[in-house]
Length: 551
View 1 (cartoon, one colour):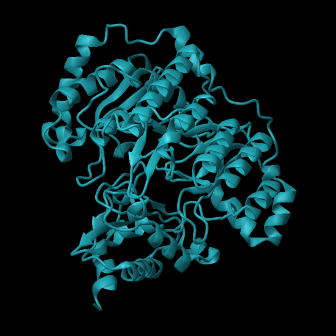
View 2 (cartoon, helix red, strand yellow; view 1 turned 180 degrees about the vertical axis):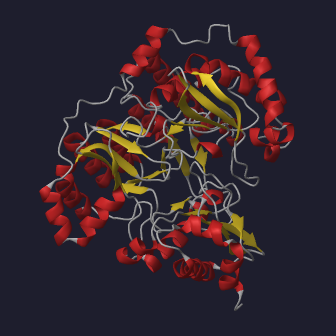
View 3 (cartoon, one colour; view 1 turned 135 degrees about the vertical axis):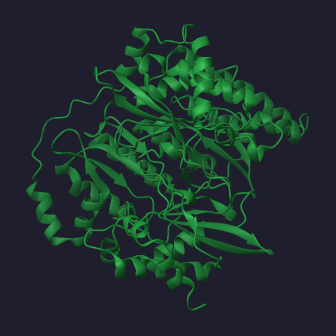
């Protein structure tokens, strides 16, 4: 993984010192909250319902074991003993004291981490595939390009005050595990006929109150032109994006108004003016960055492991865990292991300090000291030998991290909702917990198969409900929490927008509605047909009749 150079260290340490002075002035009353607000947001510090919340960047979702230990230490010393992993592959602390936040930032800087550009109208943390560099189905590892984007965008003078926040995602594989079509800019790594690496570029995706799937504006931008082309896209947006109405300020609104063809034309026109300027990354610098992402020297091992086979025969839960929580690695005899943060009755994405310490220890022993965070709020050990799976599962299961539900119905994405967020209209966490408890039978989950439920507590869609096979949106209805049911969304390469099925429900009603939807699927599916395919074949009417017919 990338290691800071002298410039990175200087930037993060200077930012800590600057913010320490700002916090001291706020505590003394020399700054009002209104004056302090833009300063704290530049450092990832929000004011939520009950306390401050600090969002820490995990660039492209890659962590070292040492960094995970520091996150555990911060949770233990400065918070309430846990952290919340988010859909932007970051971590949030929900209860830091304002006076201690500069100390937290210094603790982060000491292990090459920060909270810069995790908030505000700037280019946020670039996200990517949680299996990047460790999966056989990718054209190339997208993380070096994500690191280039991080360095280019951090404190970029032209883009430090955009019309609204801006999100970029990259995938290096045909299977899109990064939801690139739902981002302001989506990048898909490709090779042209000459074998050269480049990117298909999509613009204008996003969720929120106006969900839009991004559209391709260039089929192939050579890797040498990546930064100049991104700069051209952002210049068009920065100049023409709405600043009079924050609800219409995202690039998706501008791209929809202009149309993909016109946005491409204006981008190419701007690009022609700037592409010969010094935005190309020097070859030696590109090589230096890529060197940090070289694949670890893993030995080729047998794919058949008798100890794993024997334990699978004896223990159904272990067998389910291996089936659901492991993905193929590019080196034979190894897997990418996903650690579910969605246990029975748990809060999606939460991990205690003790659990983080355990994951760090397991990474040191079994995964080249490397950890990943997925946008689905789980953790990954990316370089695990199959022979080590029984020992790892035993440790995880004892710590409450052995849940075998990755990709299944109870692997729910949920925002913090009304329990924490000042923007929310309804609670997300208790609803996710209740759905998990209703369906928490591994054999039943295995029978249902892959099914993604995503829950948001307001229209801002931090829980990605528009991209859920089953999406749930919490709204305020005459002072009461009400939940809308949406079906048919996808955040994968076949991206689609979920559609509202009908009138909303209270908390108990929405859980019953989900159960009715699942029952229709089980009764109507064809052999091997997963939920989303069945929904697309059947259409909404049969589900609507089952959910609302008896009301």
